Image (cartoon, rainbow, N blue to C red):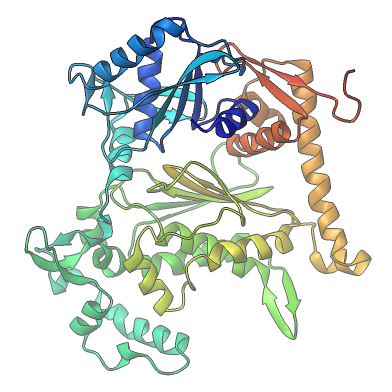
Length: 481
C-alpha cells in the first residue's frame, strides 16, 4: 500500500473517486453500492476503517481477513452483482490501525448490485432508474465510435448531393487553393472522408452514421436519429420561456451555418486587433462553441442539445461519451476525438482546426470577449459556459491600464462569487450546492469548482460526507492558535 497516496486521500477527503467507510467488523451494503458506482463511472478507491471526515479509526484486526473473504465472495456472487467482479482488497497498517483498501477500476461493462444500477455523482452513489440515463451509461462503455455504424440501406438518394459543390469550395479555400476533393467523384470523395465504409463485424458495406449526420436529408436523419435536434434559445427578457428560438434538425453542414447566423444576430460584436489583424471576438467564440457541440456530440443519445444565450452568459450542452468527470482547464486538457470522422470532415472544410486548438482559443478569446474565461465541464452531458458582459471592452480596459484591466475585472468577479459562497456557508453550514447556485447566480458545476478551490486553499472544510455533513469556514489569514 502506498501510504503517501493514502495520506493524500485523507487530506483531500471524499471525492468522486475516493470513499471512506467506517466498517466496524462487517462490510455494509453501501460499500457494495460504491463498488458498483465506481465500476460504472471512472473507478476509485475505497478505504475501510475511515470516518467520513477522514478520521482513521481502523477495523478490528481479527476481522480484517474474514471481511476480505466475504467481500470477494459477494462481488463474485451473480445473485448480487451482474456482471460479477473480481477485486483484490489489501489489508494494511497505518499508525497502528488496521485498514482495508479496495481499488475499483473503471469497468468495460455496466454493473448492477441487487438488480439496481448505481452511478457516481460527486461523492454520492446514486441509483439510476431513468432509461435514458442507463442508455447513456452503456454508450460511455462502448469501445466503438457510434459514428462508424454502417447503414447498408442508406442509398445515394438519401444524401444531399447538392451540398458537395459547396463542400469542395470550402475545402479548396481552407487548403489554400488546392485540395484532393476537387478532383474526386462524389462517391470517391465520401470514401476519402471515411463516410462510406465496410463494417468488419457484420461484413456489410454502406454509408455510416457520420455520412448521414453530415450530409443526410432531413427525413433520413429523422428516421435514424429521431431525437436529434439543436435547440437555440435567447433568454434575456423573457427568462421563463424565450425571446427568440430556432430549432435545427438538418444536416451538420447546414446546422452550423444556421446556428452561427442565430448567434451573430443576438450577440454583440467586439473587434480586437491582434498584431495587424482585426478579429471579431464574437465570431471566434460563437464558432468554437457551436463547432464543438456539433462535432463531439454523441448522436446515439436522446439527450437534446442546446445553445442558449442569456443576459450574463451563453452556453452549449450536448450528450457526450465522457472520459472523466469534472472541469476542463488548460492544465488538464487532453484532446480526444469523440467523432473522428465528423471532426476530420469539419477540419477539411475549415469549420474547425486541429484537435484541442478550439478549447485553447476559447480560453484566450472568451476572456478577451467578456473579461472572464469560459468554463468547460466533461460528463455524460458536456457543457461550455461563456460569461457575457456587453459593457466589457478589452480595448477600453487596455487603454485604461494595459491587459491588467481585464485581469482585474476577472479577479473582481471571482472574488465576489467567492465571498458570496463564504457568506452563505457562514450563515448556513448545511447549505447545499443547489442553494449556492441560486444564491451566486452560477451553475452547479461552477459552484463545485469554487468549492474545490476554496477547500484546496484551506478557506473552507467539509466535515462529514454529503449525507449529514456540513461546511466550516476557516480564517486562513488569522488561524486559531
